[in-house]
Image (cartoon, helix red, strand yellow):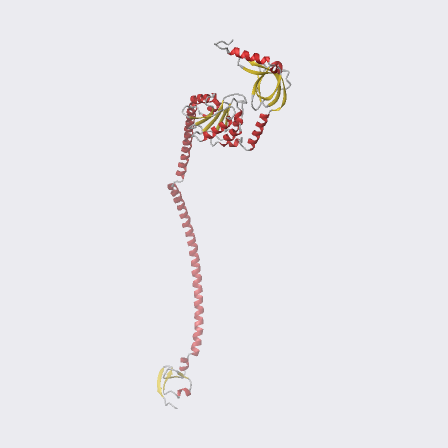
Amino acid sequence: MTGDAGISVSELNLMVSEAIRKDPRTRSLTVRGEVSGFKHHIASGHWYFSLKDPESAVSCVMFRQNTLRAKIRPKDGDSVLADGYVEVYAAQGKYQLYVTGIRPVGAGDLYIRLEELKRKLAAEGLFDPGRKRPLPLSPNKVAVVTSQSGAALHDILNVSGMRNPSIPIVLIPVSVQGVGAGSEIAAGIRKANDTEAEVIIVARGGGSAEDLWCFNDEAVVRAVAASGKPVVSGVGHEVDITLCDLAADVRASTPSNAAEIVFPDRRELSTRVRLIRSSLLRAQAGRLGETELRLQEFMRKLTTLSPEKRILRLTAGTEVMRERLTSLMRSITETKQGEVKTAAVMLEQSLQRRLTDAQHTTNRLRERLTAVNPAAVLNRGYAMVYSGEEKLLTSAAEAKHHREMTLQFADGRVRVTGKEES
């Protein structure tokens, strides 16, 4: 009886459990589905997993005594036929499929489509490591794309508050599970790019593969790849890997780890600054020491090459060269003087010979001139007759035409007047 006080939760679960047990269809059945979230409990030997199809999922457990007889060990993505029965797990108020036998059907349809999408996007270069961008050391603002009420946001706020609360956070609230979540997440990433944030965190807490499936949505992957700002993906737990993780610039194992990656610890920054300062001071001291040694070497070279010393060396060299030049000039002068004296003697001798030869030639010519000199003829009693115009007359015929004439004798001239004939 329910009464006004109602029934307890345990009573409700018992009612549902009895109703399921009374239905013969739930006592022995075979369920076809895709394995997801497979876990092997080492201590007990039991297997825990889910069977799913595109619309639904059911929790399954296979106890150790049945796993030992199993012909296969299923893994996520396997499509299987599971034999068993359904009962309500009263402690949690949910029903489970208790598997007694399992056999393969083939690769699950969802995982086949996922692998096809993965290969397609990889061929386009969306997962290429060369596209990954470094994160800023200390971003001025961080955008977080996640559920407003989820554990992921709480973890990020908690970690960022402890590490560096001075960095502001811009929340872009989206659905992170269920129908349409992929489109919301993609839109949230695009919206985060319109903010002043330097880094974008896409995050969701742990869950089954079905819960995280929206992060395999093609729209989400393309939004991450097209983001103009670095994206850190912190989805699920460390073992969970989605296509969003592959496209992101940095993959974090959890939302908390994403916050640890993005938000620098103030104490670590202070320590790093001190280390850098010490390193710079050591480098500065080393450079100063090296510079001082180089300066000393330059001073030594400058002293060696100073103008005064160069002048002294050049002066000394000049004196030596002057002495050498003086000695050389003296030697050349003495040699040339000897040559001049020899040349003078030879010239004098040559002149003397030339003068003697000239005197002999002159005497011969004088004798010839004397022999043909008219004056010598005049000395023998002859005379030369000139006209009044001082023209030498050489015949009587010429003299007949001149009245005035001059007779040239050896001792002088005499004017004569003759009778002009016609």
